[in-house]
Figure 1 (spheres, rainbow, N blue to C red):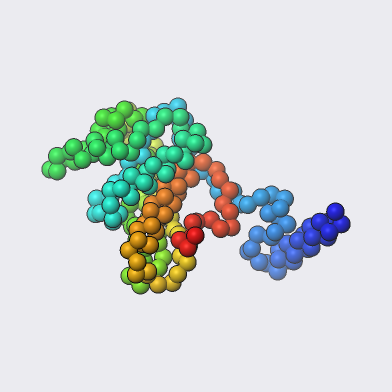
Figure 2 (cartoon, rainbow, N blue to C red):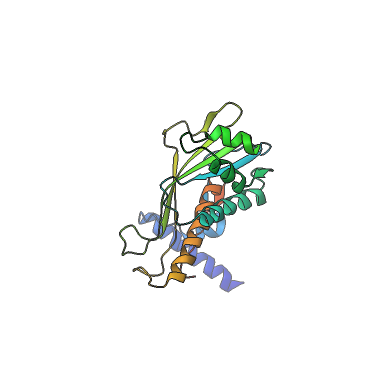
Length: 220
């Protein structure tokens, strides 16, 4: 018991010292008392309204359709588990509705939502999905522009600005500084990035504690 008290006192002194020094690091004593810093939801969904996530990749930047499905399913499972919404339409249904469109006249988000029976569409436009920004440095990241639409009215619920939507970025902590040569490794890293991107989308809609090792390491 005395050892524990001495340890706590030492951590408290260290925390105060860091604060006095003007350090931006969150002190260990603060974490013991308050827990990790909490990130708040940027928008609150109505849990009673049927919701679908639609991932749009027109360029495309995601290597395969399977990765888009994996990304959406990760977000769907996380939101359903946490009961952010009670009923979610599978992304596969929305994807199938979208691919049936005529190339000369693509369906609107409202049309896709109506066809799959959704009240709300979380629209995710992926503008970047890569393991490296320069082809040499290993830094997996995904950039997404996100909007939430009301299907009954066809109006945007969130965000009001900017027109391109809320920008969210998912990253993996690279265990290496250069691109790997093994295809199987990069394939796994793409899957890890897709999962992290999906979780990044889901986390926009609930409060969560951000641990110090936030972001999956690709060396794990």
